[in-house]
Image (cartoon, rainbow, N blue to C red; front, side, top):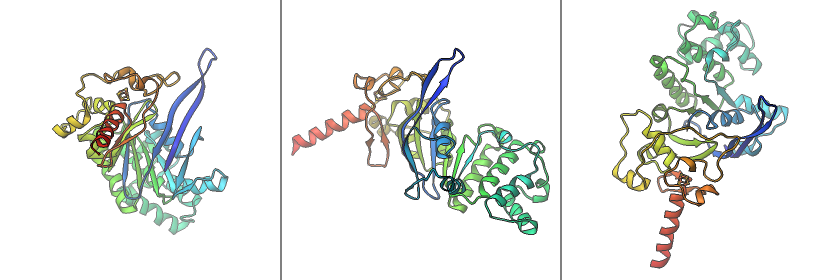
Length: 338
Ligand code: SF4
């Protein structure tokens, strides 16, 4: 569980000037065994920053990460224990593997380091079992191959097998199919879905592709310019988007299976025309709701303050002044009736 995770980076540009990049602001996210959460957003929205914070690659500027309800200890032992439970799969499987090491070495090393196998027949059996889990069978066809002798899809399966070697509870997939051939993306999504179910994994699927998120995920969280703006059950978010940015994202995504219901249009409060355009520069982000320079509904409040979450009865939420205002208007009507 991420609670209020914030990350600001200092970067120095080519003129030697230091800037603060506000990559992520107060992100809350919860993952559960056997379920997939989709984190959806454009390039530069902060998706990878959030994944890297969750993998403890960077310290957060503020906020905390909890595992089984307890804050993660940043001692050496605490972090080692965390790495055994939370594994990250990167976008580029070729860059994730040592080009000089065989599949046997890569998987064997992970198994030995984390104490799940020692050597000899025991190690060989465990490597074969891992290859079976990611459908690289028969094992003898793959076990002595180097990364360049495998296809992109096979390499990503080896990366997933290496993550499984530590018997994690949580798998973080940072755009795990975006560098693969279109023809094999569905196979890898199906593999992740099967592993989530058979291993009871909590899966975070990070993507810019809302159609693949819809296929794999139980719920979706939408990230815009470092701010989480909407989330909820996958069908609720896709059929009835509540935030103008989500609506634009959906309208710009080719997904012939999606229909926005009449109820969805009414509840969404808007009809939007437009294109996504360019996201803001995070070293000088707009104040308030960061979507306001591109939002046709922007009001004075939007330019100064990010609204609180508005929660809806279907488990769906959005951070938008349109809903905050509508909700306070409804509350006022309720009061008046009483
Ligand atoms: Fe648009 Fe304001 Fe809602 Fe942001 S908070 S999406 S600017 S209406």
